[in-house]
Structures are given as C-alpha cells and as structure tokens.
Amino acid sequence: MSTLSKVVQLTAEEQKLLQNATELVPLLMEYGTKIDKDMHIPEGIIEKVSSAGLFKLRTPKKYGGYEVSIQAMIEIVSEVARGNGSVGWVVQNINGNNYSSSQLLPSEVVDKIFKQEKEVKFCSVLQAIKAVVKKVDGGYLVEYGRWAFGSGSKHATHALLNLKDASAMQQDPKMKLAVVPMDEIKIVDDWHTMSLKGSASNSLEMNYVFIPNEYVADENFEEVDETRLQHLQGEDRYKHYLFLITSITTGISTILGLARGAVEHFIERAPNKGIAMTIHRSQAEVGHIQYKVGLAAMKVESAHLHINRSIDILEDYVQRGELLSQEDFVQIQTDIGYAAMLCSEAVEMLMVESGGSAILDSNRLSQIFRDIRGGANHAFTTASTCLELYGRVLLGLPPQHIVTISSAHLVRNQSVQQEQAY
Image 1 (cartoon, one colour):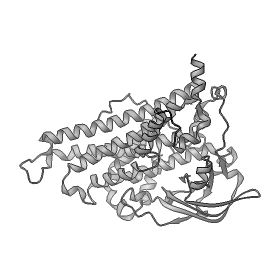
Image 2 (cartoon, helix red, strand yellow):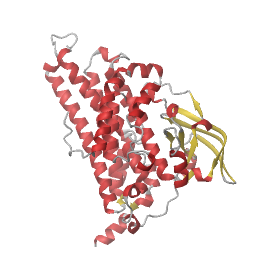
Image 3 (cartoon, one colour):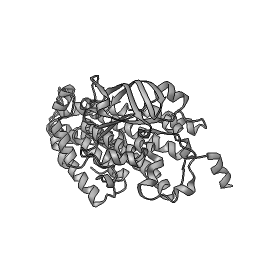
Image 4 (cartoon, one colour):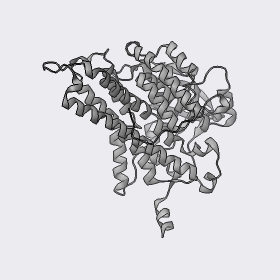
C-alpha cells in the first residue's frame, strides 16, 4: 500500500532490520489470541524479537546497538505492530527507554549497565502515582513509590522512573529520572484491560529503596546556546531533544502499524466476505464499502504524512544546530496526536463495516480495534490534548502540555525571533 509520502531513506542495515521485523509478522499474527488470553508475550516470542536485533534499534553502537534513525525506528516498530500491537508496544517502549537512559546518565554508569552480559531492556514511567522520596547522603531514599503503566516490565532488566508525582510535577514540571534494577521493584499484577493486553503494562512499586546520586538524572537544564548546538556531532546532536524524540516515537509507531494491519486485513477478506441480510456476496463489489476502504486507507496514509513532517521539522533544526521555534515544537506534538486520531478513525470505520463476527475476541480486526483504542489514549498521542495545545498557541496563549513546558530551554523565544526579523 502506497504511503503517498516521501521515499523513506533507510541504510542497508536499517533495511535488514525492517526485513527481520517483516519476517516475524506471520508468527506474531498467529500468536495474537494467545497473547491476549495469557495477558503477556510468551518468552519464545521475546527471544525471537531479541535475535532479530529489534530491542537494540536505538541503543548506541558502542554498546552493540544500531542507532537507527528516527524514521527507521517508526518504520521498523510499525512493522512489528502490524503483526501484533502488544509486541509492537513493548518493542517501541524498550527501544525508546534504552535510548533515553543511555543519553541521560553519566557515561561511567551507562557503561556499567550496558556492558553487562544480559541484554538490557528498560521499561519506564514518566510520572509517579505517589512518590515519597527523601534526599539522603549519597542519593535518594524512596520510602514509597507507585508508578502505573510500566509497559514491558515483565521483560525488563531495569526501569527508568520519574521520582516525582503529579503534585510535584505541577509545582515544577522538570523530571527527576532514576534508573533502578528490576530486582529492586515489585511488579503489581493489575494490568487487566481491554487493550494491549500482552504489553503487561503493570504498576510498579518500591518500598525503602536507596538510589545512588549517579543513577538519578535531573531534568534541570539551562538555556541551550545555539553556538554549542552547532558544534555537536553524531548522536550528541539529538541529546537535547530527547523527550521530543520520545514523544514522536512512543505510541505512534505502534498505532501506525495497527492501522496498516487493519486496512490490509479488511482488503484481504473483502472479496470473499458477504454482507449479512443482503444479496451481496462480496464486500469488495459494494460501492459504500469501496468508499470506506478508500477513506480508511487515505486516513492512514495521511497519518504517515504527518508523522514524516514531524520528523522532517526536527531533523531540519538538528542538522542546522538551531533551537526550535515554539510554533514548530508544538507542530511536532500536534502532528503526532492528529496522526493517532486519523489511524484510530480508520480502524473504527473498518470495524463498523465488518459485521457481527468482528466482536469476537478471536477476530484479528477486533484485537486491532481494541489495541489501537488503548494506544491512542496514551498521554503522548491523545488528540484532544495535542489539538488543545495547537489551538492555545495559535490563539497566543501559553502551552498547557508538560512536554512543551518542560522543554522551554530548547525553544527559541518568539519575541527574539521577531526582533531579529526587523
């Protein structure tokens, strides 16, 4: 299916990883019902994903990873999600978290973590439900902490956790991110959902756990000097845009793959599927079905265009070593939320036209519908939040989105831009 977007430029290595993902798709489809029934991904599937190199997409090359581009990350993870949403969700989160952790911590700590024999897999939660944390000699004592939605926690070796809860974040939106080995954390079996069942996005708890200073990264950045940005090389050029990259890749990769899978599934079945209580023996021959398929496909293709635009905007600023304007920063976030909405709408349209059998748990489209609904509710991809952000800024009001607010040090002051224009 054509994406109607620019030709995606991937390196030979990235193409091979994409092919590895494609080869897993039939197996992931086959295990879809079992993954939902068991509420987790079988270890055998995790091992195959690992053997395909798909947990090391954004891991730095010096630690045996591939450091794929943002574009490649989107394409590869969406291909995994075309096979199964829960697996795609876990793959995108572990990759994003591995990358974030490698960029946030001191190099000697990163060396210690990533050079261990066991493959490193990070889960993360970027805001605590409740956190009682005290600063003590040499680090922080978590007297009690609880974090919801630790996607991939059953397969993780470490967790990246914000030591601040909602109340603390409202007072100061800068995160305090701690790296904690999973053997210090209790996984609470509370992931009983209608959506992304196999992602095992359980709550995480800690009681009286000490975390050394060097394992805690304060998001307490000063204003970034553009002259310094212009001298950065390689992956260092992206370091300052860490949370924006997370916003681009976390959630939308899986959502795009699910929507692509839904269109593919419907098209494959339509020629041999009739419409109940009618004389139609083939959906493919019915005008209103043809219209819905065309519209659904265009929504998915349009979503891909918005995702590509968000990547292009960021890459342009990174290559020029310049701070983003607030307008473009917000555009990126809105593009992602809007793309999620388009994909979700496309799947819902196809679900409506799929008849009564579509409500069966074993129906693949039913699973896609449930999974994409949950994915689109993620805080990074909630359309209402992103569109509110866009509308506020267009109307001259300050942003309300935590990612935008906490990244103020990376956004060029609009008044300065206007002064320089005259």
